[in-house]
Amino acid sequence: MIKDIFISLTFVALTVLIYALSVKMNKKFKIAALNPIMLSAILIILFLSIFKIPYSSYNMGGKVIASGLGPIVVVLAIPLYNNRDELMKHFIPIICGVTASVLTSFGTVMAISKLFNIDTTIVLSLLSKSITTPMAVESTKLLGGNEAVTIAAVVITGLIGSAIAPVVMRIGKIKNNIAKGIGIGSASHAMGTAKAVEMNEEVGAASGLAIGVTGLLTIIVIIIFA
Image (cartoon, rainbow, N blue to C red; front, top):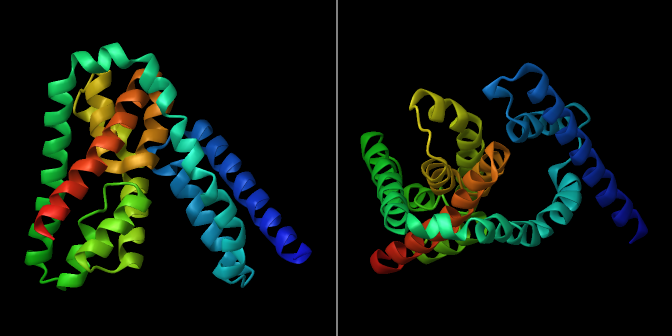
């Protein structure tokens, strides 16, 4: 028991230190590819590989971190509340934007799957890639997909989305904070929202709202067609 607690705390501390290092590197070099979350994942994988540490051991600490995700997501309600008036002014554009994002996500998965003749189980597992992990896993269960593939897809989507979001906003010359937040949150869920919060509170609030609405619409569509 004591040994398990020690191992868990050790890997929690390791993860926090690696993330802190990744944040410093990102701030120093200011390169989009050095996204702290993506860089942390790569460094942790290298560390585990070099020292031959089984993932099951590392995940003892990972579960501790994961257990805190629920309460942390609730914190997103603060910027939502602070910016509620501005968000309500754009209610219809927000719903339309999120709906377009959900349809685009589904359409892209279906098109690529047909193009490369991907197995149906994998296709069903990828449909929930743009929503938060708990909702994605449940939707995959409804569809009869592979949960492991879904989790991997959600993580990769979030990593890529959070890494390229600033670049996309710059190239697309997107200036409106609500538009930025809706685009980021509906495409790359909580990981993207972490990047949105860094931009400013209004972008983070819109992104947080998009997470919930995108998840809800995705589940509704899946229930209808499941």
